[in-house]
Image 1 (cartoon, helix red, strand yellow):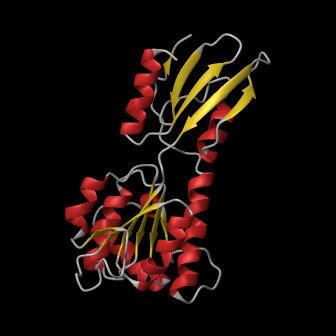
Image 2: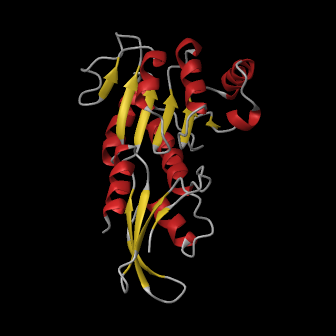
Length: 240
């Protein structure tokens, strides 16, 4: 592997960027393709899209029939939850099973306690003080669960301005309608707020905190695995 390719891979890891190192197994030529690059005209565009979605490496054939090894490196997915509530407690073991790092943010210190969320990254602070430092990137999911506009609204607005692959918010259709009005007053257009999964979770008739947690993860995982419209910028770091 060329030094510049190794450097590009290390930068991607530090910046939590998805990246593929493609190696022609016949010639040894390689290139580094970031998910954020403009690779739609690449001869292996379909395979690149598939591998970025799945996160799985593979040997594939190029247009000339030569084998190319696509070594995929994607950041570990994260879930940022606003609200140290019963639903988020139920989400914690599911997140662990699905290999998601889960971060809980809630300024209500009576709820945001290590006893209620053992082993999790827990911030007993306002979202305004925490979220800017977390970096809500394309491999971060976001869920607002406090049902309190004073806590949720700023956080949802921040998530909408980010590259989160999933944004969900707890509340009935009526509650969400009022939320949309407040977000509109904050300058958000319907095309932006349409990203919000609300009422949150898959429509499976979930009632208990555990069922709601499962419904949320159903939509969250689908959003990660089916995403196709990642923002792309020109300039792959390639070399023969």
